[in-house]
Picture 1 (cartoon, rainbow, N blue to C red):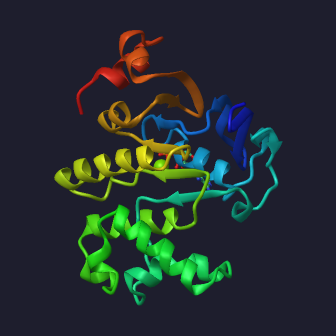
Picture 2 (picture 1 turned 90 degrees about the vertical axis):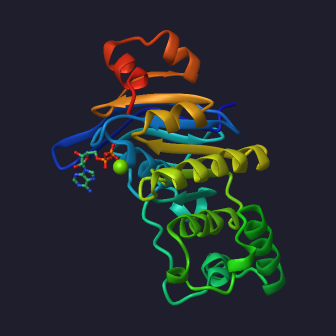
Length: 239
Ligand code: ADP
Ligand code: MG
């Protein structure tokens, strides 16, 4: 069974319909990338999946259970945004442990999980630093680490690399790919407007335009048999 099922999902803000009926399945363990031009509804779709926004109509199911009204904290999801939003007055360790502490996890468990995530993300030497003492790439890794320690079933990334310079973008992208491989079975849903990111990270790509799905397929399928000029232009054109 698909881990996430979207059926005719719609979202309006006032009279403005932003998501216009999206139906698709996302499989457990899959790396699914949503691409599309700015304003097409990518962030909104992620916010609907995470529960930060309520869908206007349609159904969203996780493992067959409809979650339309389920609180974000109960969806087993962690989200990484493009702006890292770390707590400036807390150390890297505390930034990563904070959510678990709130959830009432014991100290030893918090420490173990933070240390494991730090190891995975090469942040071990920086655990005692404050965010302002880190580079942009390191800060983004802390934001990813904060998500990892929560042990989510599904990771959502909203353009996590867009505030990084070109070299760091490549390095962090490779790290995210490695992370997916090392967290067997963790589903990743990743939003970008960058074709190269989409082509290199995705198991499957979903191309969005104006709140509608234009095509879903593997990078190779979209590259070799785009179903429209829009998809061809979007996937094939150099940045
Ligand atoms: P993307 O992430 O693909 O750039 P968004 O999902 O952020 O696009 O936005 C899609 C459209 O929905 C845009 O036209 C945006 O202005 C509009 N929109 C997003 N959030 C809101 C909101 N809270 N209220 C009104 N309009 C919104
Ligand atoms: Mg966006």
